View 1 (tube, rainbow, N blue to C red):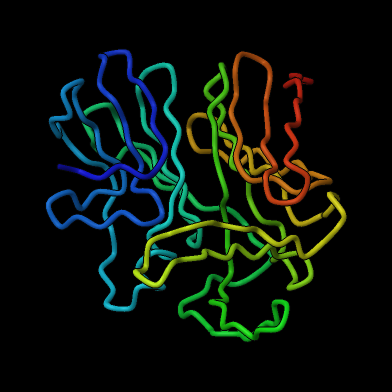
View 2: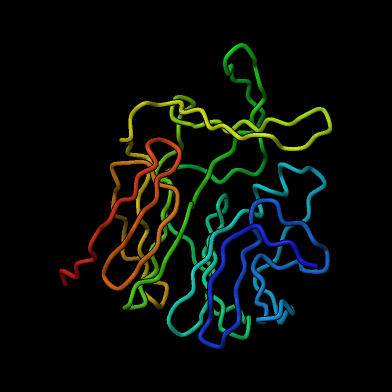
Length: 236
């Protein structure tokens, strides 16, 4: 049985799209996104996972988010790569694009030590590019992106508590910053043909986004657990 831990979307055909998720590992389904039937049968995949022996490299360099447009085209944005891909409903790669960034792409993961309460823990450190994406009614692609990297003071830390047998008992997220405001995030917006239209700055933290009609919604869950709503206005 395939374990699903990521996002999900319903296609007009009645099929489902599942993302790889952060902790998906299954050699029989190597794609970054899987398209399955209503009974769970795997039809096809999109995108290719990179194989690494190091667990941190595997989970960070294969981390993605995805969106589906009204024609069942699939879009995949890579969290740590300057890469946005578009796949047709049959899984064929139709477009691969990048955009200008203010920082280099990480080719390796550094380990940094941070004191959390009485303990000092080791955290992986690398540059992130994308957090989430969505496609609007006009076919424009909106990618929630990093305009700069978060500082250690802005990074929330999630701690998992387990019992003596290794079973998860609780999860706690520690806020590093008391402010909900930051200039670290922007929207990178593309025309349906891949033309880069520019970037729109945000003034707050953001984790994921959805578009319904002309409304764009952002969930910010690690600082104040807020939902922001915006209206998309065409000024052309």
